[in-house]
Image (cartoon, rainbow, N blue to C red; front, top):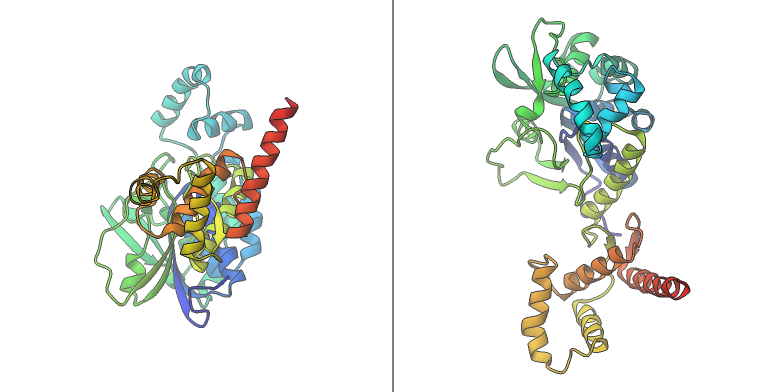
Length: 374
């Protein structure tokens, strides 16, 4: 695989908010480490602020351990049984019958001010090392909203002069609206930075960073700040193409899956891999791809009118599969991906296009054998 970025440069990393989906960002970090990508600044919103603190500390193993053991009760103060129901509610998996029974409890909980996050405070004290942030060679910026001042804030965490202030501002960035909002040590209340800037690119650009890797978590709380990005700023975007689930459905098993997905998505973005749900290294030419497509249609008896196939049917197929631009190669990959998904070919691995063809074919043969046995 060919790395598209320059390993001799130092990059800035922007980490989006997304709550329980934050393990994805740790997977991206793993890929950056493997590919030798250096960074000198991190900005984070909400869970991105917490992950950004770990990146600033350069404590990858600590981050993996923390996410691998994270549960609802690590974040919210409640009994295990209630925590499991809440996780199902936030992930959309709570049955209707249980939802009707549980809803009044949730309403009462929010009438009392929201979810008690005392465990999150304790988790942060165990995981975050403020002294390492203060003395790091990496600049850390976080976003939050001061409710007292009614404005969004972009804070350089390294400059805060006490451990308490560092932990407070990281928590301030992650103060989800569902949480019980209690004043911090300065007597002020804060709101999740996603209400100001869910993908904190602005603070990096304002501080002079030109080469930025942005990690976006789709479906989270908040909005992206709109501003003009200068022509000399280069942004490489890494984001999931699948639904990562609810932002408050914390679960260690899900976090491990998110980490794996983030790792492969980073490889895709940084090495120019093809595919939406799969990770394909290109070895074939556009002509090879067209030949494969024609062979496929010929097997189906659809190549009698070649001009009609090229000018009408293939553009129609590309539209159906969401291939807006690109060449025949991208259409071939889209066709293969559809077949691979239908045949339950494992997505989380890197394959060459030839290997992908073989795996899809093998899956089809296995499926036919299974049907014969039935």
